[in-house]
Amino acid sequence: MSTTEPTPQTAWPVDAAAGTPSWPDTGSASPDYGWSRYAWRHLDREQARVLWGELTDWVTWLRARYQLGHTIPPCWYRHGVIVEELTALMAAHHAAYTTGSDGHDPARDDLTAWHRHWLWPLIDRLPALSTTSRCSDTTCAHSPRTPITLDELSEFLATDLDHRPTPQAPQPKPNRHDPPRASAPRLHPVPADSPDAEQPGHPSRDTMFLSSAAMNEYRARGDAVDLLDRDREGHPRVRLDGHLWAYTHATGGWIRQPDDEDSPA
Ligand SMILES: [Zn+2]
Image (cartoon, rainbow, N blue to C red; front, side, top):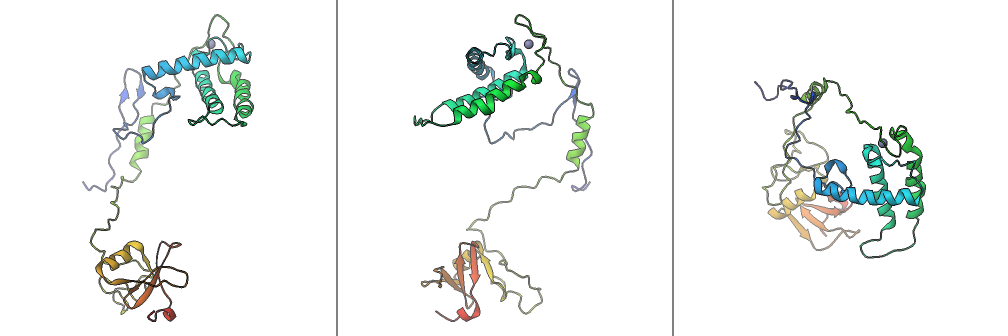
């Protein structure tokens, strides 16, 4: 079988105990970023213990300080959405009220912004976020349910992946010690049988631009010679195959000078 043929669809196994499909294995490709200490989903037991303590203390203060004992019910910690929202609100409070590591503590508007943009809007929408209407000061009526996902999910994901291109192996970055390329880049391609076709190892006659890497190869081989003088704009110049070339930062490469400047300096 050719390696270019699509691989047959393979559904991910279904967790028989839970009755739900298993998600694609992300393997060892760990993300190159770290999860915040506020990311409940990714906390281990010790990290969660620390955050629970911090959040419980902060919410206790918040409910008393702003008289939110009814809006934030006594059973707030049982409602996942409230825990996530209050954690985010606490993180924003930390950001607004803490100083930098250098202790610099100028007057700023982060504090009023926290109230206006984060605290009161959350308090306004909390009743709609969670089913706390049947919770009381002594009981919690919250009974979280696992949302249903259609059984076809694993087949759907397999089909989606089957229709995507095969991952490409990462291309090695050019090394200045690599052997020179057979051809240098040029603005306009020249047919191979044209008299203007470039000679091996040299730019063709209609080549007007060379990348830094290409020019460095010519300089390393001695084909391009650095000139002491610069052009009218102060750009460094080299001579290559009888032409003057000037480097420009704007292009990041070498521009062949017009013919009227090709006369020897
Ligand atoms: Zn409750």
